[in-house]
Image (cartoon, rainbow, N blue to C red; front, top):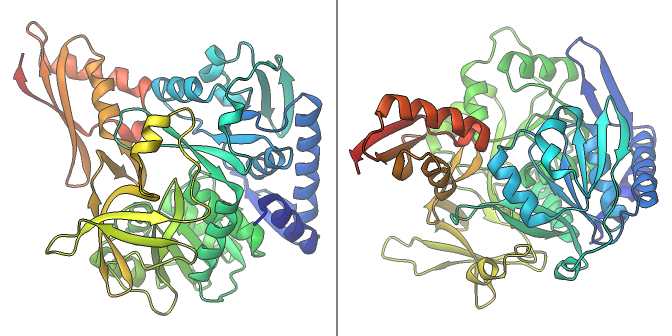
Length: 467
């Protein structure tokens, strides 16, 4: 499985077929044919090579969803570099920890991200994207003592959390993208979709596999929605005759509740979902409201997808059957038949970059410990809960220890405990003497807005006692 070779072959076969459409807010659009996207990949590959980016160069990508995101990721893979997708809107504390771990040779960033990354630019190349033009500044450092830690087949380092309180960079081989896209596609049982609407961030591996490489490798056209607002989403579904959507359950529930009565969604055929829990009740609500085949699956940054429901045999309340070339077992299953989900695959991630201890703790006798509890319903896997100190908010991983550390950075906070309560993040804090609860809580919220992503900020912060 060769990611670059397979994508290039697919694009060459498609020729002038449109592969990516970028609708504009003013009603216009930019359409990329397969030939045009391939030419952009070649152009960016040459640019990177001229500036010394090559085998095992680490490059942080702070790009919005766009055809250029796809072209940049593929161009880096083509020259043997390692891409590290990072959310443009990452908090300052998150970004600092990622950059400190990654020590990138170069940054590829949107114009709007320049102020955020200013402190990380010294000694690094910067590829600054503005209106599709790429501006280059800085120099490439030739010193690199850690490149040998990256296996030859790794194409990206994708950051995730396992309850340690800081991000871990999972080293993903190219074969994982190819196999993941194949397993994803098998869930559609041979159905040939034409146009996929994409609004999840491409920095997440679920989106990379389900919304980037499935369309690239299986002949679909990607339509990039600039918004997740239901009115805009359904407008694009109708205008572009969308027949396939991939999203997280929380967004799908929102779409189901606010679907306009007059919109024509008759072309919409399949919705694939994952990233967080989908109850049997929510499954029925979404499927009935959108009138689609709803396929729920399960995966992790370290391996996606682990399982997925198959079209025409989906089972509500489950995350489907295990994908091919993957072994799954449950450890220490009790009388309820629940246990930690352990997995094996030849294209599993190759460890956490520069975190050997965390890598060792994630494995037992060749099995990867997901940190999730599950059970089997015949051949269908059921996700029960997370064992590690993480949770999902709007389908995005939240490390509870990271949030607690961010709160405890305030001088008035002695201790903080966070938990997911009724679907919302809640923090209980203990204050030092002399600090007023209302004022301190307001200060904490303002500080969190800069240090961590907005979805990680607790909905409620409650003082439980005073130290």
